Length: 219
Image 1 (spheres, rainbow, N blue to C red):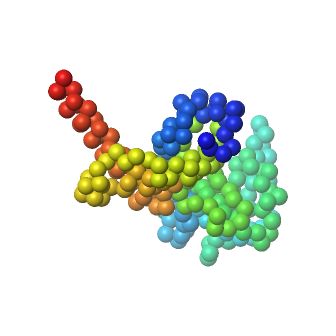
Image 2: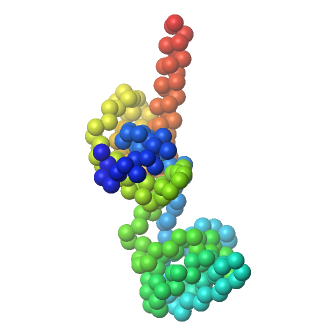
Image 3: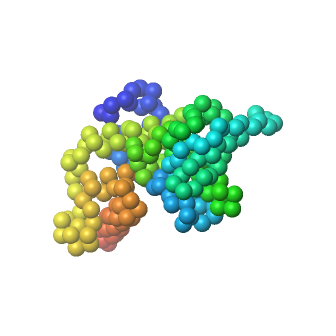
């Protein structure tokens, strides 16, 4: 069992066709969000960036029709003084105190030297992973909650998976073993890890398909 999963959460997971720990860990992310700190001096216009900066101005909030809001604040990230713009996140104003360190992710406007913020964390980036998995979810299940269950599930079954690929094939094609591949596909340390893990699962799927086709020919 996975810690924290009770009856209500179990029903939410069943709506995603997840009934067992095996179903959970075999639910792969469809992408990973990159939160690697960015050097703005080398970043082109409209790229997604993550910066760690110090609050250099009092935040300002502007309201418009339909309860829309725009929060603006100046951040000093290295040698760059940039404007961080938060849409409909005026509630963050109290967390943007002068001198505070924050980490933001969003789209970089090189001409205006501004970032349209999509992700905010108070404090330095130290505790945040560079790459976070994003899963295809529905209902009230949140990404952060699902990641926590995935982390717990992987930890609970480490070393218990039966390897489906022969050691000779793993070595010949330089493929990661199943435990390592699952860790790398869900919580990679870098883009190379993601590609390496996916390569293993694609190879495994193709091999099983070929074996199935060969078996059908013998019937």
